Amino acid sequence: MSCITSVKGLTLCLPTSKEVYPTVFHSLVVLKLCTCQAEWLNLLLCMLRGCPNLQSLRFFQCHNPHASKPRPCWKEPSSVPWFLLSSLKILTWANYEGREDEKQVAAFILRSAIFFKEGDYLLQSNRPQGETRDDQGIVILAQALTYMSAHICLKLSLDLFSKSTNTWVNSGSSALFWHEDLTNLGPLIELTGANGPRVTGIHKLATVNQVCVGGRHPILRLLRDCLPPELPTALNSDQDVYLWKNSLDSDPGEFSTAGTWNFLHPSPPSLPWASSVWFKDGISKHSFILWVIMRGRLVTRDRLLSWGLSVPSNCLLCNSSPETANHVLTECGFSEEIWRRLFHHHTFSLPGSLMEIVLWCRSASGNSKVNTISLLLVQAIVYCLWKERNARLHTSTAKTADVIIKEIHLLLRAKLFGLDRETSSQSRPVGSSSSSQQTSFLSTWFTFFQV
Image (cartoon, rainbow, N blue to C red; front, top):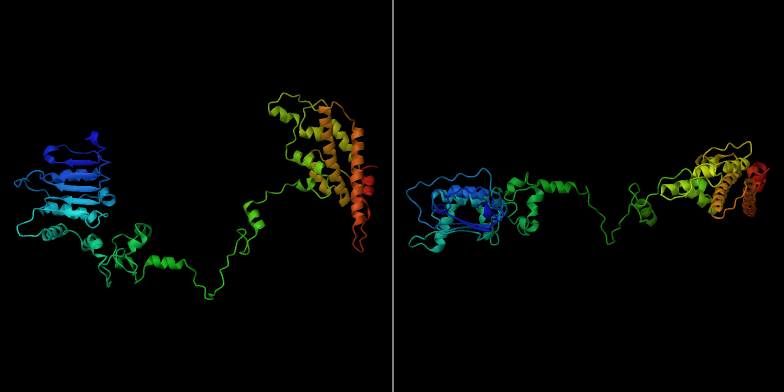
């Protein structure tokens, strides 16, 4: 039988099928089974376990039954076969005789199948003389339902009578919660669909008194507990107003584009050197070069070598050590001389690395003008050193430290002169007499930097 497990239809009869069928028929949807032999129940039990997707079950007799052999009793399975709960839609029983084994099988199938609708099950037999077809069908159906409980009988006949009957619920012990018209909108199962029993956890055949406790449904109470304790009382014709939370911590209010943008794109953590690179009085091109250096993006020879380029590794300023950003700007002998001669005042204690120098400028002195000049001077030194390095690389010309220092002096004096003019054009506060406000930038420059 394992070679035909993919069939969709199968007919079995014990006289021609004596072997046991342990195979699972996953594709089988129509099964026809002969009931003429006394052992047909064993074959049925075996097939019930092996047809998970069966949709149509049909019993028939192709031989005359042996009356001499005793009929075995129906041994109900310990668990309901899966196809009765998921797929079986049609049950047809030809030559139904109402024997004890037949009634037990019919009752088990009708009690367990949940997808039956009106006309899905049909029990037929040879009509006795004088009985009409309809009367005989009612007698046979009553025999099949003898072993079924009252609420299962109601479930099977529900589709037939629901459209023409109304239920007056008293005790609720027989009225089905999902299938009665309790809301004048039709049965609840038609309103919620198949998801109703699944979502609520209430069995599809639960009665009203099983669902309601103390005259109320517990799920309705849970839903009501989720609602606000008091409904709005001041209802009027004004339109509803929707408030917007621009951040998780803010109170509801009007929508803010800037606030929403800041929430969706939070600012990165501030860098300690940012205020020393970007400040109001800075020179843009100097600030940009220092920013590139602080971000670690300066293209020095050590970086070119790390990218696999074949370039010399020596420093272009001293021609003795490998070129790195820190070496070119602070550690090289050429650079050290420029730093030392420009920050020569005894009140200055210049750190060793560029990062420490940039952070030190903000608090180099108690004089705000000295601090501003220190920031301008640090950026100018870095800019001129890098400019000199590139000039030696591309033009093969070199300037001495004295020439570079003079260029920096000229550059800073021009910048400070502009700051003094800007300060003098602004009105000073009345009564202001502090020395830092009365002293010009140029005066401070000649006092601390260019003596």
